[in-house]
Image 1 (spheres, rainbow, N blue to C red):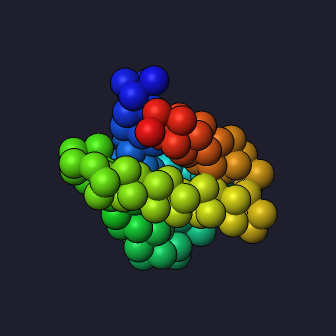
Image 2: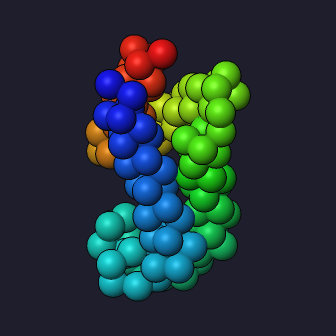
Length: 120
């Protein structure tokens, strides 16, 4: 159970690294525009906001990695905190931007959180 929980936490961290790359570096590219369903004009105008959002996703990823490498009880507490942050961000994003975010962001974090708690 511990290994599966760690793998899921790592997967959530990797997803957030991917979100960072999409939002900070690929926002205006065809891949970024297709991913977020943007036209070029909106992508150009919103790029500074997307970079900010990408940076926050990087912080979430960094926190999850910290939780994976830190010794318990700190590692456990850090994983719980950052997974909860990801879930809240995913639920908010689903409610305000795109329902798909619930499944791409919040659901993997919820599954990871459940496994982290059960593995304790």
